[in-house]
Structure formats: structure tokens, C-alpha cells
Length: 218
Length: 218
DNA sequence: ATTTATTTTTAGACAAACCTAAAAAATAAA
DNA sequence: TTTATTTTTTAGGTTTGTCTAAAAATAAAT
Ligand SMILES: [Mn+2]
Ligand SMILES: [Mn+2]
Ligand SMILES: [Mn+2]
Ligand SMILES: [Mn+2]
Image (cartoon, rainbow over all chains, first blue to last red; front, side, top):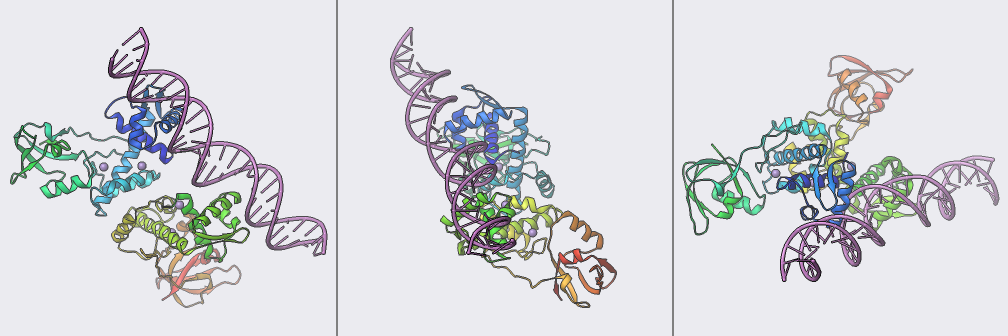
């Protein structure tokens, strides 16, 4: 139905729209690593296909159809990521690139059977929600750990980066998706935090780390 | 490394070379559903990349590198087919198209991990051998059932068609990959055969069916 | 309110992979 | 051995998705 290039643009618009309603040409250019002129060309094409609404100089946003397409791609991306980690023993940080290719395999039957085979997972390895076959997903009410008040017990639900470096650090600190913890102290000087994890050890993490960890109250 | 189009050409040359050493432009044109002129264009490109040896009007054949690439693609194709049938409960006849897309996912790590996850299968759902990570595979000595002498016990190892119609017929007759049987009678009039399967029932099959069933002696 | 800087769009080009129509080469038939 | 047929290649074009360079629109600064 849509080409790989079109799908990548649609997904990029969707993601950038989470930040702000109207997406700029330059934002897309940065996200997709293409020149602004190429973005303009593609936006005209997507407009003519009624995937986005776009007026010159006004930025772009997805149409209803566009959102449906975006969610279908994201669904595939995250299901494949789950498959790679859960079944093929990939590391967390190795799956994104491969999923970037797998998300463009078109067969709906394949996606739905994969979903069933995986047991209809609700979240991908990075804690991001997996849309169901109708595009619905459960948006977890999550907040940055760096914004949580002390002494509340929370659980890690997602991470804001998928880098090998972050994964390495988390492994070393004994943190992973689902780990329970509470903030014991926040140091004004450098924003570092002391956490009690699994109701046992106390560890220290930096402000930078706390800002890429998303948690939910338990 | 190679584009999807290039990979499809490489694979097509490989398959056509099983029939005859030198592959013609028209044969490729038919196999790939493109016009001869387009094939000529691509052959020039593949030659310049040293994937094939090609001289105008002389036909084409794969170089050493070309064979390696072809086997890597075929390996992926067949492993994915195995995955779809074995893990995702696809029918036999539904996997080819999807595998035609999946075979172009580039990650070597993915293929090797998939291979391990599936238990290093040696044959795909159609009985075709799956090359290992070095491109080696075990070529089964197989012959058409229609050429086997009566009263020899044989086992179905492969099929010469992947159509839904064939699968339906095989299911109905109680035949599948690995089924043991012996030929009890061959009728001169229409070439139909009487088979004793699993040392139990006797069934009748047509000459057409017998010619697309490949078997090995047991 | 101008001038300056940034963002975005246009204009023109290019590579990949396909096409049609016509020419040329190779094969087969007379 | 000509002539006819088939196969293959060339020539010229199209679409998709990218690019650079330059122009135009918008936003920011003086
Ligand atoms: Mn992608
Ligand atoms: Mn993810
Ligand atoms: Mn293919
Ligand atoms: Mn197969």
C-alpha cells in the first residue's frame, strides 16, 4: 500500500506530533536524516494521498487515515522488538535497527499471528505500548523519575533512550523494566538521587539517568 | 549491501542455473515478471559489481561471490518459511509471498539467531534444503515418485509445487512431508498409481500428482 | 520599521529500477 | 544461403526518492 519511504515519514510525523501538534519541515528533516527540500517533496505527495494535512510554511499533521497507518507500523515495530528480545535473546539495545526494517513487512496476517504467538504483549522491551490490531493501546500514566517526590514507591515502566550505554548502566545498577524502587534522597548540588531498590539495597544514580527513567505509582 | 531488486535477480539466476549452466535474458524476464530490456540493464549492473559473469547475447551466470549471496538469501527465505509454518501456524501454501519479503531483511545476527531458535532445521516446509551460515546444505538424493519402481518403500521429502490446490489435495489424501509409502500398482491407461501409505490404507493418486512428489528410498 | 537570520520552498539534477519501441544479433526455416 | 523468426540489446522515457543551490517566506533582532 505505502512505500518504505512513505511509511518512515508517516511514523516520524506521528512521533513528532507527540511533542507538538504541528510538525515542522526541519524537525522531520532532522528525524529522518534527509534534507528539508526532500521533506517538502514528500509532504506534497503525502498530502495528495490524504495521509497528512499540509499547507506550505504551516507544517504538517496526520489525517485520521494517517494516524491509522502510523499505528499499524508502530504496532509491527514493537511486536518485532518484543519477538527479538523475548524469543531470540537479543539485547534491548540491538533491536531497534532490525525492527526498523521488519516494520515494513506488509502481511497483516503475519503481524496478527505474531501477536498471538507472543501472547498479545502490551509493552515492548523499552516499555512503549504496543497498539492492538485496531490501533488501540493502553497509555500508561508515567512520569519521569526525576520529577517524582521522595518516599513514593514506583516501578520502572519505560526508558527514554535505547542506547547500549544506558542498557549497560542499568544492568550494572541492577535496574530493569518493572523494578520497584523509592526515592530516599535528592541532592540539590548535582541532582543525583539515592534509591532503595526492591526494598533492599540503596543505590545512587545521576540526574541524567533519572531523567530517562519513566515510572508509575504502585 | 545489495538492493532488494538486485537480490531478487541474484536469487533468480541461482534457481535458473539449477536447470542449465547459462541463464538467458528471457528466462529471467519470465521468472521475475519484468521486460527483457530491464533484465539487460540489471545484468550490466550486476556484472559491474562482479556478482555475475555476463557477455551480451551469451547469457549470464553467477560468480563465486554471486553464489554466496544467493545462498544467503535462500537461507533466509527458507528459515523464515520454517518459522512461519512451525511457530506461527501458517499453512504451507501461505508462506512463500511473506518469505519473499522477509528474505531481504539484512541482519546476519537475526538470521543466525532465528536458525538457532528453530533448532537448525535442515529442510523448509516444502522439503527444500536450508543452507547453513556458511552456505553448505545437504542435497537429498530425491527422485520423482512417478519414476520409482513398484514395491519399493519410500518417504516423501519434497514437493514440486507450493500451490494451495496441491496442499488441499495432499491433506485430503493423508499425505505430507515424511509420509512413508510404497507403490502397489501403476496403470498404463492414465498413469495413475495405487499407493499403500503408512503400511495401512491403499489410496489412488494421479500421474500429475505423482510427478510433483519427490521421495527418497528408506 | 528595517535589517538580519532562519526556515521553507522552488528549480534543476541524479541514481535506481522499471517501461515501450525500434534496431541489431542470433537462430531457425525455407 | 537467403529469408523469416526469435532473442537480446539500445535508445529514450517515467516514477520514486534523494540531492544542491538559489529564491522566497517567515521570524527575530536592531
Ligand atoms: Mn523503518
Ligand atoms: Mn521500542
Ligand atoms: Mn524477494
Ligand atoms: Mn520453500
